[in-house]
Structures are given as structure tokens and as C-alpha cells.
Image (cartoon, rainbow, N blue to C red):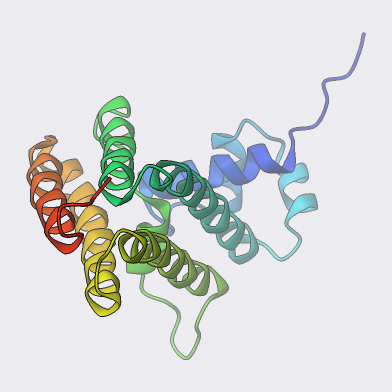
Length: 197
């Protein structure tokens, strides 16, 4: 009888990202993550010898990279199309999970860090937000937006979407996300002087 192959490192990281997105960082212990990813506890400790902090950091980087890849592809069609795709992705995640899943990057960012410590997972969250903002700002500039306005609008868009995802979960409704989508789209079109593409 063949032995089952051990779970991949990526599957455990993806499981941790999903668990953090659903329950927050505090609830995502190594034991709970192993259970959530259907992985043996020993494998999880083997892959992540530095424990929960290492796993949380990699989970944030994994989730951030997936969003970034999706945004990068969508922004090839311009900032409005990119924003629509970004919003649709979050809408689908929230709805498909029955309003149980949010953003693991945001979940880590709002968690209170230990006193006198700046955890690597929090730094990973800050870098993720920076990359998402930069992608949108670059697209806005490429379509005629003033550079300062592009950066401010990109920050507004990322902050609005992240916050609205949390509101959707609380209200069990996509209405907040739909409202924000309409307003952000109008702002992007105005910033690009009618060339939002």
C-alpha cells in the first residue's frame, strides 16, 4: 500500500492564509493551521521551524502575491478595468465564502502586535499594501492622472476596498462594496481625463 505524500509547503501556507482570512491571526495557531490544511502537525513544524510568526508571514506574502498577480493582469486593460477586476475578486471571495472570508493581509494588519515588537507578518502586510497601491498608481499615471493624485487615489482605493470587505462580512451584504465600486470608478475616470481604459 502506497503511503500518502506529505502535504506541500504551499498547501499549508495557503491553508494558513485562508484561516487568517476567516478567523484572524490570533486563531491561526500552528495546530489549527495544520488541521485546517489537513496536514500532519509534524509536517507543519518541519516546514516552519520558527513557528507561527514564520507561517503567518509566509501566508501574508502568499495572499498578497495572489492579489498582486491578479491586479497586474487586470490593470493591463487600464485602471478602471483593473479596479473592476480587483473589486469583483473581493466580491466573489466574500460571497462564495458566505461572508466568512476577508483579507488575510488586513487581518494581520489590524492585530495588535506584541509590545516593543514589529512582527515580520506586519511588515509583510505593509509591503503588500504598498505594492497594491503602486500598481494602481502606476496604471493611473500611465493613463493621464497627475502623479500626486494617482498616489492618493491608489491609497484611497486600496483602503476603501479593504475596509469595505470587512463591512460586507459584518453586514452580510455586498452593498457596501457595490457603493464603493461606483464611487471609485467615477474618481478614476475623472483623474484620467476620460481615458480610464
